[in-house]
Length: 510
Image 1 (cartoon, rainbow, N blue to C red):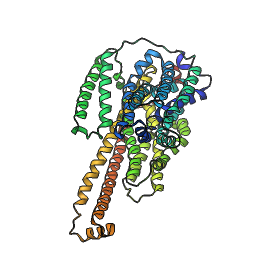
Image 2 (cartoon, rainbow, N blue to C red):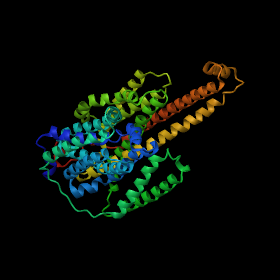
Image 3 (cartoon, rainbow, N blue to C red):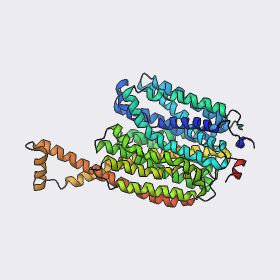
Image 4 (cartoon, rainbow, N blue to C red):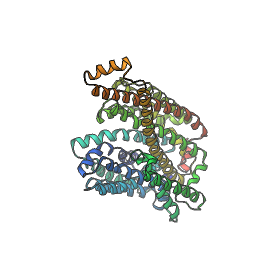
């Protein structure tokens, strides 16, 4: 009874420690992306081989996330957080000193595995140490970190790689991780936790590792391997489907499953998780597609594409304290609905972009989307955690975060595939009207290439390709806009009240 009422000696310092660890972990999802060409060159591998730096982290992280509930029961939230954060620091150091691609991929897998419980445990600890009437502040702060870290990652990674060396994108984690783990160990030392020795569900663990591992590889490598034209992708897909089907059947029928899928019996957890997964998938598509489009079609450098995307984080940072303080005075479904309306509107705005759009307009739409993002994470997280028992929060957060992460991988693969296919289709449609007998075509080729018909044809084909990609970009964003419109219905499947149940203390603060 006393554990939920525990308050750390310094709540602000505790919050800083938890937030820094989460920021560091979320940052590492994207910080290595822009450094891949440099890493590949230094370690003597191809650009395609270097993408395993990203894939290995994603696979291990995806496997570890749903195990959070079981690990919490075994070790306790505080001990698990401190252990995971210290191991993350160690894995980061090992990544920085790796001398071969094989070593780096192995250490990145270790880093992804120990990172798995960090975000869900942070969420559970914040809810448990904050008074009931201030838990909105805690969740809003965590939402801000979740939004800002992926934006900062590519910019910081590019700057470090250009000015220092790529190992420093990993070395910077070491002092942060040691500081965060030391602070939390000291501040939460007196927090009482009940641990147990749950039996190891070997069948569930094996099918989870095989199924999720194969699925993440399919999603990360599908585009590179030409999807189902590759025997490797076909075999991995079959293995994933069979393993995940066995995993679902086993976990739903086992008395003590390693992943508690019965959490979906809670209405708000089910509705909130569905809203989180679909909205995050669409949000992740935007975060992926806009920088790619800026670089490929508008000729931006990676750094300037980062600058154009960065305004997305401004309003979440500014509004977080106010949302955390006042959000619980409103029906959180209305706040989430407002977020979906704003994000849908910005998608429809991008659907009207063309190749002449300037930096200011791109940045302005990103800024406006930030208004929607600011009102998205905190209400949805609060809704999905609201009807879980205190002992279920870590497991529920881990399961929801796992599904959210998996949705991001799905959306990344589907979005890039759809964009490529629509661009090819539009290129073919536009090229149908280009013939040597058309006066307009001859005039355009003369203007482009002068007396060199080969150069003129090449430049004309490049222009058609650009237009095809632009039309495909507009179509993808039109579809994303309608997804956000559809989410207006999903969020209303939840039912008040929406106060997270952090224990007996929670009843007095709402």
